[in-house]
Image (tube, rainbow, N blue to C red; front, side, top):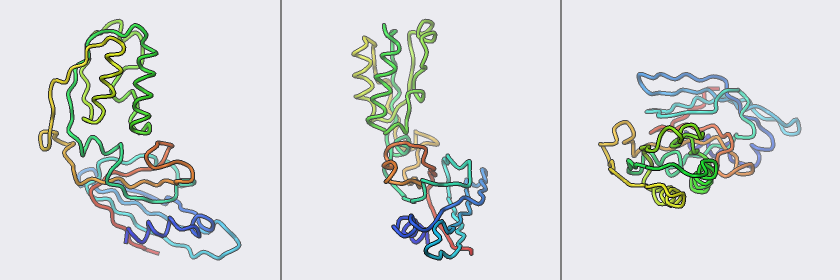
Length: 219
């Protein structure tokens, strides 16, 4: 019934008359199962809305973030995606890359890397995922190894070469050799809102990455 819940939250009537709230959640790390209870409440007094509670079950959960309050607004429209920047680590080969040298202008270098990641990943992946963002680090260290999804290689390499840094790909890690990141079946469930921000751009949406999502109405 996950399809029914998704369709329910994406209707115009739902957005105008209803409110989605997080009642509770429980994560079992030994089984990688996340269970969440969501409620649909009336937000408009013009049209009566029946109170509902839904239990969301996420199996083989890899990651979840943003669920710090019971208030979900404005991110109340659910969507499941198989392709998304946060899934790159699971559905692309991983490259081990070595960077040698020190940029003359660290702030400019970090700024350009940040811009590239924003353009390609919508800021779902930030510069701190791969680089130290301070001058003191580069004064002490002239070599760094980073592991990146294959699709980011060309753009990061171009910025490094622009700043006279030597960028070389040392190893490509594929399939089961990726270890915990070899999860080609994972999908992402986004609590988003296209009126506020597209799903491929990060603006504090709530997200869950798991292999299977199911839902049942419990009230």
